[in-house]
Image 1 (cartoon, rainbow, N blue to C red):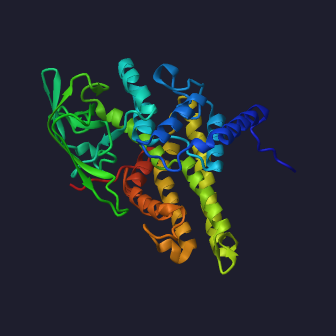
Image 2: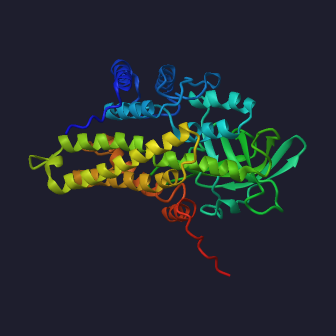
Image 3: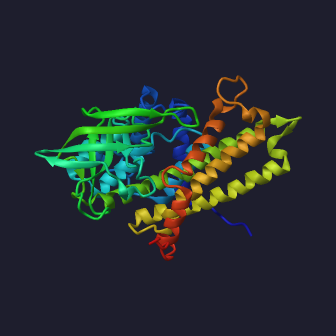
Length: 395
């Protein structure tokens, strides 16, 4: 018996539209996303105009203004991944702050920040982790004291991605020093050009300084730069962390890399045999494909929950843990399959994909720790998702 797995005529017509757009405009997409490059920004504008980025964000905030549709979102992701064409800008501003503003921001804040962020005109960094407040984020010590019409911020953040490139920061600060640690936190927005901010780069095992330490010395932030209510920032922070987990484990990005891996294994050979025809490598590839399909099915749950405004619960909690581990395994297969070529790094003319397999392998090894370690994620899944008892605390 033949099973029809198509989405129906209307959606297949939509798929044709997406393919035609990619066929006509795909050459405009940048091969690598550079946050400041004119080609990247022009491509982002093109995507927004046609509804392939910012699709469900209201027009008054700079988006395309379409109604949320789970299957349309799936089709867009599938076709861009199949063509290996950039789906546009992502990052902390677009994937994390914009949906948080839509939940908690004032109307003025939405109008001030969403459009320039969506178009890549305003780059953001996240001021969350501190030297003694990483996994236990609520122990943060960076504090803000109200001084007239401004907050005066002092303290330090660490592992601050893109702080050296960012125009603005969204930052957790302690505004109620006498309140319980989860109740005395507020969520502030401020420009990185504000006097009193010092940025120091941190070089990672990839060899880049994509992380930073950030120090605040009497940084003055306008009083109305707060998202949500004073002392109620932990609720805002947790909502944003949910969006972060979805971004870090995004199955659509995994699909694009999987397609690139299949193409690599179809074209690269060892002793005249294609990599994909070697049984052990093909078996590993199929296992990765199975896990990827499971994550994409889970993504449909998340999309459906978002459209229907229902809590995702366990489906949302597993994305970061499983997604980053899968990406690391996927990149590892490419390196193993390439043999001695896979052991090369920058500067070699024999590199494949400009060394991105090696870079992503190391990057996702770090992300298994970053954004909440795997161990912390498992605790969150057990306690919040499965309802298991909390780990007993030592007296």
